[in-house]
Length: 621
Image 1 (tube, rainbow, N blue to C red):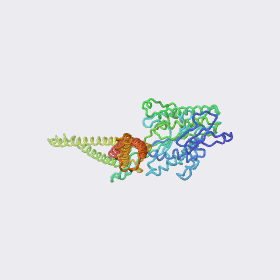
Image 2 (cartoon, rainbow, N blue to C red; image 1 turned 45 degrees about the horizontal axis):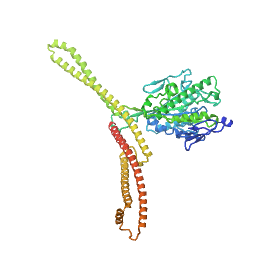
Image 3 (cartoon, rainbow, N blue to C red; image 1 turned 120 degrees about the vertical axis):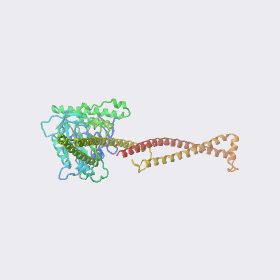
Image 4 (cartoon, rainbow, N blue to C red; image 1 turned 90 degrees about the vertical axis):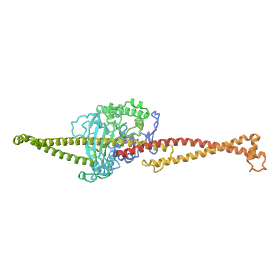
């Protein structure tokens, strides 16, 4: 959540600050006496005050998304939400002001005023250049549209008479916008040019609350396609095969959303077309709120499969929610920046935005890596090409022999009539025909074998993809187990990593054995203490007192009975205190033992499964 400073208009109206941000503890307080609010303190993942910089906002919200999501095959979405005039366009930088990408330098560092989009584009191309063969392997395509009056309009189209675009479902690509233009971009300066072109076409207008109010929802999409790293060139297909390199390509989608602000017609003073725009903006945001509420409830009930299957998410009620279907509860890692106005006059809308953002935190997305199988390797393709050429040559030779055999068959009757005998040529022709038939059958079997090999290669590629997905899931489970161990107070070795399962298990087993030894010692001490206490308590009758006196021969004979009784009472109190301490220690150690046994069980099962998966993956690859 980001709280902007008071605007010039609000300062002229002498409006006070009713929303206060506390970045150090990531909370926002509502300090307003003029409105009833059951909750006046909101907690978020990150909070930015009026003095926060654009760089700080980007680094703490989406700074690691490019390297850790996009270039690992995960979709990512960054969207800004808030009422009109709360600073969404400034935060996202969708006003065409990507000054950092201009100039003669292809990758000039972002300026202080640059927003999320320009900084994300800079990190995108900088990370691309750092990859091996990055400029050749990574392809970036950009598209930009707005949703104006519930119609999807292409902001990069040069056709002034272009109509609204159609949103439809695709079996392979999900929700797509038909006939939406996309442009291949190779540098931030090209993205800047397209952003400026789109900003001139985007619908903006003036209202009483904002002189340059966005009248549409803008969605900028960057599709990134990462080809597999090739280590074998086509010119060296006959040479020795180099070490194995990744054959899997990846694709990802970076979605940058600038939502139009929610507004009230009474406050904006909108009339005519402006009022219609405001109604459609509020309609889209209302459906978005319904989707967020449904997903929030679903996120809180993830443990119930019935609740998940019976829940209906109204994505289709608005074009905005339909286009953001992957970003909200789907295949994407999403960051939402809630923009807040601190003014007392906007406190009601600000509280609604804070509640909306709080519900959004409960949404659970299921992001998966978008892996594109590369098919056959270069060496396998070269071997198949060589085999295909050899089979074509043999087939051509067989066809030539077949043609000569046909000529011999035509000339055979004439030779028979002139020489009076035709047995040998006919026999020779029949032998050639049989050989040709055998070779043709062999060629057919070879072609069938080639098709079979191609099909097997495709199946293997699919298996590798599924194995990679399973590995990602087990990695996530492993990380959750490590986090659970840390929450339970189990100290893991500092060198614990995914490839050091045996070390982790041995370390935990040694800790468990130490705890068992301490528990046995405590039980022994407790048993001795109980026996001593029982003997002391049983000393009330004379025979037992005599026995105890006989056992304590080392005591001084000059002590009188009163002194001995006093000493026994003191020892009894001390022993009772020791017994209580030992019993408390035993109970605590039993709890720790149960916790460690449970953790050891889960760790061993998970590690065995992970080792099995790793061995299976190694075998498959």
